[in-house]
Amino acid sequence: MFVWLETTPIAQLVALSLWAYPALLSLHIIGLAIVVGIFSMRDLRLLGIAHGVEPTAFISLGKLAWIGFTINALSGILLFTSQATIFITSIPFLLKISFITVGMVLAVIIQARLSNLLVDDGYINSVDRTTRFLAAISMSLWIGAIIAGRLIAYF
Amino acid sequence: MIIDSPLNQWILDTYWLWPVLEIVHFFGLSLLLGGLIIIDLRLMGYFRSLNLETINNLVPLVMCGFSLNLVTGILFFIGDPMRYSVNIGFQIKMGLVILAGLNTLFYSWKIKPVLANSSVSSDTPISVKIVGLISLLAWTGVLVLGRLIPYVGTG
Image (cartoon, rainbow over all chains, first blue to last red; front, side, top):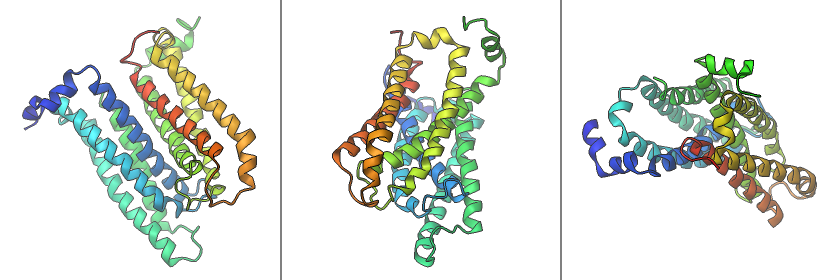
């Protein structure tokens, strides 16, 4: 299947065109900045850094992170097709995809907890222990995704 | 002068250093862009539910990201000065970093005092929108040109 994927016209375009691969890499880093950027701010805030920011501010910003994720899912899939057989056997790549998957699931959970905070709590600046714990895991996963992503080129 | 300096030799001889610097550089850009995307979009009048004053508490995280990337960036340059100094992508990237810096200075001197008098959850004047837009465009350019350094020629 991955051999076939590499022979598709779109994979051939990405692999052979002079501009397609760097253009996709450019999109991929913009998406990274949005996704990891917004989630880092959220997770660090939930962990007590920059505590002047209301945690509930990140409810509306969650949509923005999803836009970044969409950019990176699409650019990532296109980058993947060009060397599918190599990527699919790369340990750092598989780790990266796993970290991102769990990170996005956690993002949905954390966003839901933030929304509940808005409804339940009069004092919206307090963050419960479970949410803080999830934020710590989430931050670690995004750092892990960056580490694994960079290491794809080295292993 | 830089080539064959002890630091240059250490960077080249330490096989694990380059990927570690890249990973830190990527995490740094996430902190830098993450905070700025939020602040700049708010300056441009989006996400008006965000309090203009409290999101300024993200600035230390932005500066932390910038510092990480300044240090790792200088080490990249010392490690391979002949590659970067003549690279057109690197040159434009540095130009955009300077533009973004000047824009930030303008914001601190001229815009922030004006904003201090306005309501925290209101729309922003056109001058403030332009400052936010220049910041976002300059940093997006920095990301893209950084990514394109391996693909473009000398300038």
